[in-house]
Every structure is written in C-alpha cells, then in structure tokens.
Length: 340
Image (cartoon, rainbow, N blue to C red; front, side, top):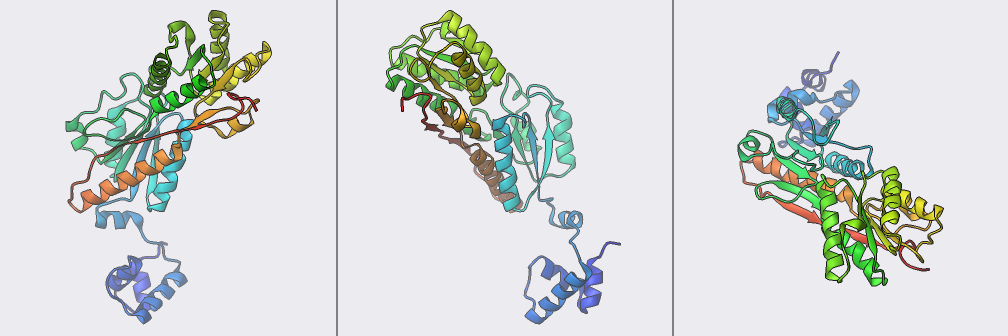
C-alpha cells in the first residue's frame, strides 16, 4: 500500500494542505507543526508521488537526452556531464539512443518525448551528413526547449560545442613550431561536422605557414584504432618522408603509432604525433601522446544549465536568450611531439 498525504495528515493531526506545505517547503508553518509532520513522514516512510506532483505543477522535472555513440569516448563523457548537472538541478533523465547518427525515425522520437511531457531535450547526436534537415522554426515551436550539441552554431538554435577548428590549429601550429614541415593528417569521417572542422584547422595552419596541404597528405579514418593503423600504412606509402602527424582522435593515434613502432620510426625524433580527445590512456601511450583536450564533461554540464534556465523562463512566461556556446579546447603537450 502506498502511503498518502492523507495518511501523514491523519497521524500528525493536521490538514493535507499543511502536509503538502511541509513537503514542498512552502508557506509559513510553525516549527512545532513542521516537526510533528516530519515525524509522521519518517514513521510512515512517506515518499512524494512524483507523477501527481508533476500534474499539479505542470512539469515532470525530466529532461530527455537523444544520443548516439556512448560507447565512444567523446559522446560518453558528454553524457556524464549531462547526468552530473541534471542530478544537481533535480532532474531525472529519459535516455533515447539512436542506432545510427544519420538514421532514425525522428518523428516517432519527438512524438514520444512530447507524450512523456519532458521539460526539455538535449540533442546529443553528432551532426553527420543531413541529419539536421528536420530542424525548422515551425517544428521547434511545437516542441519543448531543445539544446543541440556537436554542431555549428545557428541563429535561433541553442547549441553547445567545442571549437574543433581552433583545437586543430593548436595541434598543427605546435608541430610547425617544432620545425616540422611534412605534416600528415589522419582525419575522422568527413561526413561528420567535427571531422570537417579539424580538417579545416589543419589546412588553414599548413597554408598559413607556407606548407603543402595536398590531398596526398590526408587519409580518412573512422575514429577507431584499427582505421588509424590502416590510414598510417596508406600515408607512409604515399608520403614516406613525412616528419609529423596530426591524428583527429586518440584512438586512431594509437593505431598509427603502433605502425610507426613496427617499421622503426622513432617518436618524436623521426615522427612527431599529436592526437585529439585527451582520453585518460593517452598519457600512458608510448611515448605519451600530445593531444587536444575537449572539456567534454563541461559541454554536457553547460547544455543542462542553459536548458534549465530556458525551462524556468518558459514556466514563468519570460523570454529566454537562445545561446550558441563554443568552448575553446586546450593542447596538452607530451613526449610524442617534443624531445625530453
């Protein structure tokens, strides 16, 4: 049997309205009455009915997270940030995982979230190909507030992302500053917005330094270590004289470094290597990997904080600013790119 407000009120000898005020910390209640109600709550082990409370307050205190790829480092760290901040602000999470980032029945997903009366949505699916084509102002007006991750900022959309282009520029400029002139690139799949931004950062920096940035220096991977190894083999066949390598994920970097070890390329003496992500293991690669730290937990936290402010403003009938937030990554320099 579920203990109700009425049960607590009867035991405490007060009205149900008084119990509700104590539970919700509302109104002026004498300290003696408050203690008597609290004692009844503890004796009966009363737990508030969240569903009933949501019907009264016209909110569920639930945020939806639509995500893909949480078995990968980047998306998983972002979801950790989302969970941490949501818990801090008193929200429950409803997680909807897509099987593919560029596929999925978007209409069904959105209809489900509207039916569940979620207070807001975090769209944590990376921008791949045309998977943002469903977004339009008329549709968004019929939905709860949405914050989008991993995409370029757009007018009228709330977004939180990492400045991937700046991160790539930091990585490549570091290699240029070390005196490297033949800098190869192992990029992620170029259907992804992040991969295109990192490619552009490499290209901008190479051209700005007066260095060749031709297609023979670029091989596309799929973020995984095995693709990094394959890409390294292709790159060395095309350009055996490369003296540096920018790899667009640490996982691909470990595959590329394995190939370099096998053929006797010393790092960093013969080949300087910089990755991207700063996964915890990168400090223990051999040699330890110079890499770009994306602050992905912060991305998740900021997305929830901004969404919370939007939800609160909407509840009060106030206008909320729609922000495009872009975090600047940080280059972490280790022995893979510089001598001891």
